[in-house]
Amino acid sequence: MGKRHERRRHVPQRTCVACRAARPKRELVRVVHTPEGTVLVDESGKRSGRGAYLCRQQVCWESALSQRKLDRALKVTVPAETIDELREYAAELPKQLPTEFGGEKEPDKGVSV
Image (cartoon, rainbow, N blue to C red; front, side):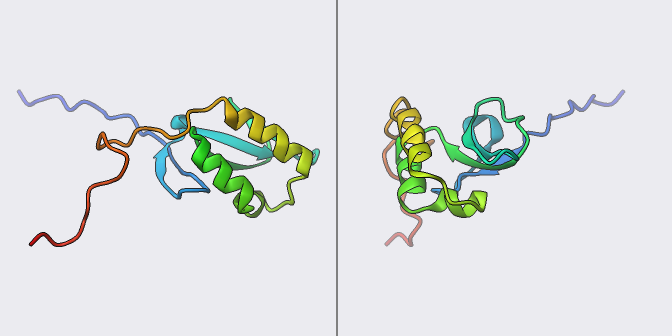
């Protein structure tokens, strides 16, 4: 008699520590501080330890590494050699992801005259 309601699947959201954009978890890269004390990229997102998420773009990675945002999120001082390894990983990522609006910047949200 009635319409069957399709059940929508819950998509976990995470926030990039650099740009603070909330995105689906699978669109971000997790960096983890493991119980052993190492900091590394966790592509699977399942390693144990304290994690922080970054967008898959060089701009966010450079911001997180140069401004120590990753250190604050992981609550640890990331060693210089690890920062170099993370920069090498980031070099393989695109410089900047296209926005959902198709341009480089978001549309103005001011009052139109």
